[in-house]
Image 1 (cartoon, helix red, strand yellow):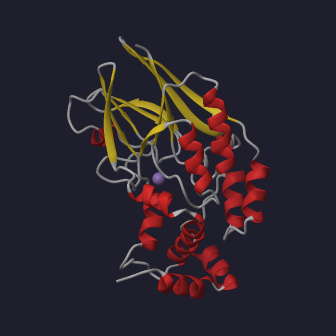
Image 2: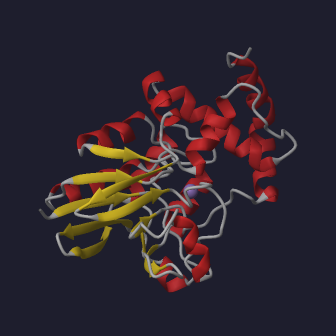
Length: 284
Ligand SMILES: [Mn+2]
């Protein structure tokens, strides 16, 4: 029997983009939805992201490196370098999300899977955020060596691997000829080539697998209201909202920009705010 599976990844707290994608896929006879990680941060989205994924019966939830950032900040014996402007940035954003997220949804993130597998019509598929071994790093960028993609397959019994993380829609092969598919990003598109970067639409993909194999890959792009997402961030008082706006409109990330982050951290006294938040968390 033909199966149509939506691949959704890298929402990064962008509720407006995820709503548009959910509306689009509801019109497309999808049988199943797999989420490939990075649901929260740095956007303002929290519980409503879970409601949206739940409304389309998402059956797989993979844990992305940004989902791990949230867990890292709130866990016991968190290793946060308070001298590092990026750590303060992530800490303050994690505080924002943690304060809004229900306990049930926080626990759901804790239980997101690292990687998993499915067999659909005899096709054995690996599902992960980056590689099954680690959900961060740059080994699987769209321009990386072909042999790097072998890490997506435990062994030659796998036919297809799907992953997210690098925010680019792609279809390529491992050095052993196995198929690799990335649905791109819903919430945070960015391209190094500037003309491509002008396209700010949300990205996802629908796989169609029948008895013969992979019948179709639909790399979709969905228009959504960027202004609405940016005003939402400002309205709810999202920390670093001006940087979020630059990401939404221009695909520009400031996660590792110590200079700009230090300046904002000082203006808002985020170091003290993060310190008292960390002290307020239950620790043993
Ligand atoms: Mn990621």
